[in-house]
Image (cartoon, rainbow, N blue to C red; front, side):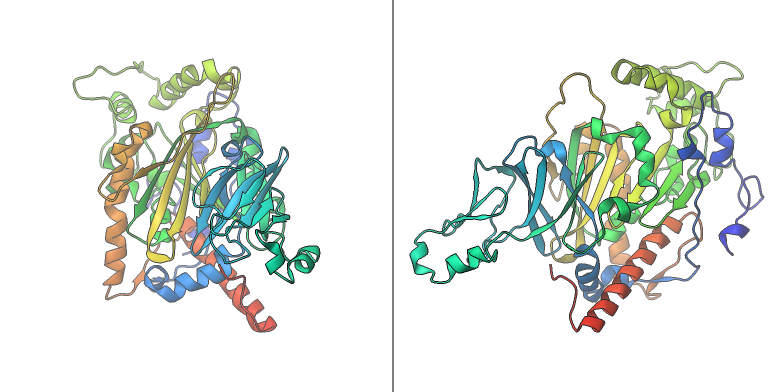
Length: 472
């Protein structure tokens, strides 16, 4: 079956209403970015379990993906003053992301050119130099060499400094929507060209004007792709998050893929077509608002009205004091629907007033565990608030122990219950493969398609040049 053969909404094999049909019921003008459709078909074949379980796959990703792809390192607001820095780590590598001048952010490889000690162990601030805590070699904030104690004992140092050998090695840096993106490959194309279609949608939503209201991180006992893929499709939601089936059309999600960007749009204010009964609008609203059984419904839904319209109106009332007239200009869809974008390989900024941003990374050099991070980007009034510090959850802590996540904590815990079990299941699988749907899980297929493209290209380049990609 190809995407063209996919049953239409209302077909006996695929009941429900499509996202585009829901847009036709919107009470406000719908922007073109939501009318755009870009489905992709990446085959119907199984995916080998070794992609998640094998050390060899991890090494390929280090050599050909993490060493060459653009990736989200931090937010610009994390570096408000000259000399502020963040430590960003990916696989076996570490970078110091620093505001070296008022209008310049640099990313240095986090390794002293003397004996290799990490220059920085944690986030912080440098007044006017980057000094290694081992022997005291120092660099200026722009990466030029400044000083070596007892430099008279290094006979070639002056010549090497003059030749530029002691300039701190850098990665490429770009800023987009307030995010600081880095790429270890100095020959990689600029981020703006690389990210291409899809990312332009955020020109309407302007995440640069938000602030980090919450930032929660946790080590997950599974490969980074397993943790990421839990948020790459809504197909799982009816089973893993059964209460959401009452108010989110999970199986009616629209999936769009471009080159290095993709998205899943999941409509709210409509029940899942997988339910065996019609959901009353009041019951739908109670589920959407997580209303307790002993509480009254906060919003009445008049006869002939819909949960979708009432929820959108309530969202406008919530956001209007903060964002002003935009709340009355944007569509119902932008008020309540879920727009989960993924910028390859591991960065998930959500669109519109959805505050969620995800990042999924290998947990250092361990291919059987990963780091999941959730940031909430919120609009604000007046001066930008300071970004929230990272709240690291311990091994025995769940997402509900991060109260700043609100009701999202319960949802993430339901996902968490699957992730480690998927890893264990794949480790012991007799089948040795996973079977993915053609459309609903096409964003997962897209991710693996991109990994194949990058790994194959890297291996071909290495064979042609007699070398491998940048080693992390």
